[in-house]
Amino acid sequence: MNANGKADGTGFDVVIAGNGVLGLSLAWVLARRGQRVAVLGQPHRPWAGSAAAGAMLGCFGEVTTSLLASEHGRAKLELGIQATKLWPQWLAELEDRTEGAPVRTADGTTVILNTIGTAEIDDANYNLIRAELTRYQEPFEDVEPRDLDWVDAEPISRPLKAFHIPGEHAVSAAALLERLESAAVRAGATLVTEFATRVEYQGERATGVVLASGERIVADHVVLAAGARTQELLDSLPVGPRVPRLVSGYGVSSLIRTVDGTSPDSVIRTPNRSFACGLHVVPRGDGHIYVGATNVISVEPRDTPEMRDLVFLLQCVNRQVRRNLWNSDVAKVQVGNRPVSMDGFPLLGEGGMQGLWIMTGTYRDGLHLSPLLAQDFAARILGEQPQADLARFAPVRQPLRTGTREQIVDVLVDHQMGIGYEQDWTIPVEWHHWIEMDVRPATLSWANELDPEFTPPAELLFASRFDPELVKLLRRYYATCREHS
Image (cartoon, rainbow, N blue to C red; front, side, top):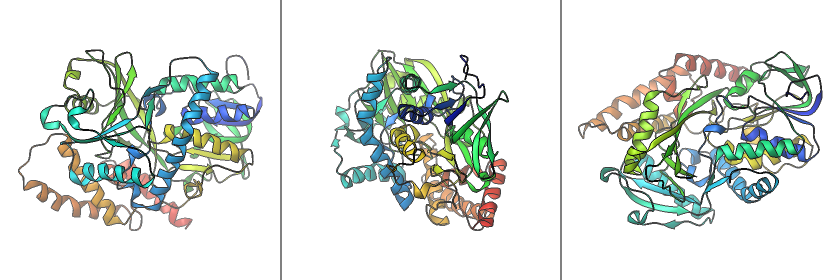
């Protein structure tokens, strides 16, 4: 590898395709263990989820009734709980070994239940978060809405209830990426400022990658951790069709410079709602806040925001959290792409060939899981005892099911109706019932038409009604699943 970060035929122990939080975290761990590691990706990380993330270090705040409707969702939550315990030492070591801006930006998370959502989604998820905190004996405390620091919602969007989770913090994604990159390089990792376009293999063994320039990097192990862009690399492999295909959970977030120079001490968020991750405000220091985030399923990753998504996001935070934000400056608009597998669950582990590893499909949880997955994958690559039970999330698998077709349709209809209320629609009282009466059988009929056996997660089923390309990909994937069942 030469001084410009270009390949010169040098071999590596491990090559990692992807320079987001997951890829850099693994590179740091492996380089500290004496491995020769190359990390691939353009410095500005186009299409990445990491760079646009709110970077909330929480798993309980993400709990939903849909997540815990299956044993797979429960297992995913428990991975998040494991990761939470690793963050204090992970951050301490990272900040001790590197220089830069402080990484942690928020003390705890305050969850609000306001008048905007629906009982089927917001009330249910709000209560379930509390129930899971109690189940796992994690501390939280109720907060009177009138005592909420910094919150000043418009009267018809006011919070009705709130509680604070002292153990769920947030970090600056930009500062975290900068520190991880510095730590990995100091430990001996090599950064290659190009994308991988193809995985090379001989027989049943992955042998390296081909870069966008056409140059090759040879390695004993190839790790695919390029987020939603990992699909391009999977398409170059014979095993690719047997791995749940990846699409993008495209999202828009914004960095706001507040008009009065203030920001909250903690994360302020609603429960997850409307196929998305809830409205959330994360302090970023120096009078700035992060506001996020929308979530729209897209076949291809996006790098520019749609106007409607940005307007919707800014109106939500102004109305539901703090009224004087309307006079604040929009310092930055960010676009990210969450890697979403076609069954909604992570792709974690050996990739169906010797020397091939897949670490993606983490949806909204990749950054939070990064310390756990980095240490676990390093152990697996080095032939040691792994830390986590990832067996159910093995990349080569049949689709994981989250419920019956009827249950998934019910979730979709609840969230579709919730979108209307969050968008402030005004309809006659009886129309809610009438709309549901028409939407539910129409959606069930569409699910039956899409595939006779498999039903995608609610957000993919919803998106497929408007996206013929997504329909083609789902049907092709399900046909492959039947061939290998």
